[in-house]
Length: 112
Image (cartoon, rainbow, N blue to C red):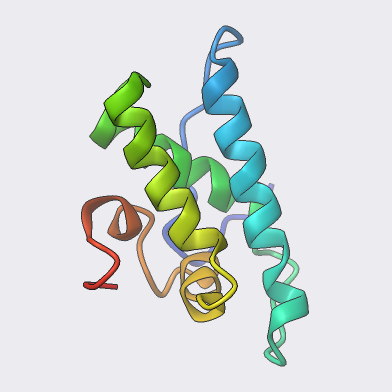
């Protein structure tokens, strides 16, 4: 495995019983995989959207905790901000490590 030059190398694996977490990682992977199609900027092949998604999801789980109705809404809010078609720059910056994985989790949409 090639080490990344950004903040996404410290993601944590999840256990097999974490279906919701796995879905969140899958959605984030799809979000970050779009970046190369949304920008004219060349994205290095060493930047893996799967690893970035895992990093962001790990931070979400550490900061927010396990999913319940209230926390699920917070997860959905973060996912919405990252998926928002009007936010390609946010996705790109998180993917490239210009914005740390914890920033979308700890900041409001207005702060980003």
